[in-house]
Length: 127
Image (cartoon, rainbow, N blue to C red; front, side):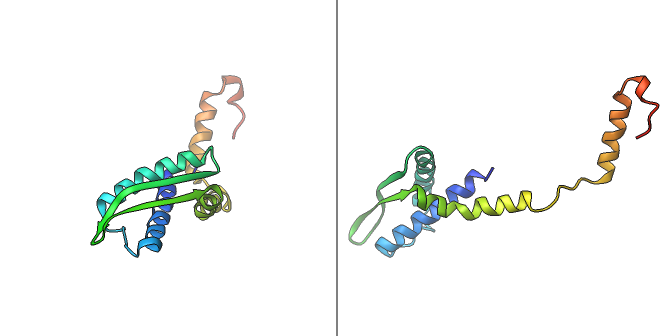
C-alpha cells in the first residue's frame, strides 16, 4: 500500500500550488499554514474515498498587508487520482517488476527447519 504520508504530501503540495495561483503567496515556509494544510489533506483524502468532490475551505490561512487570506477550492476524485497515480505506479513497479529474490542461506534455514519439524518417517528423504 502506498504510504499515507506521501498521498497527504501530494495533496499539500497541490494546495500550496493552488494558493500560490490565487494569491501569489508561497505557503511552503509558513509552519502554521502547513499544519492546517496537513489536517485538511487528511480530511480531503478521507472524503474522496467516498465522494467525487471535496470542498476545501480554509479561512484565515495567512495574512498580508491587505488582510486575512482564505483558501477555497475543490479537489475532484479525478484530480486526486492524477496526483497520486505516480506514487501508486512507482510503488507497483518497485514491488512487482523485479522477481522476488531471497538469499539461499535463508531458504536453506527454512528447509532445515521444515525437515526437523517433519515426522520421523519423512526425515529419511533428503531435501
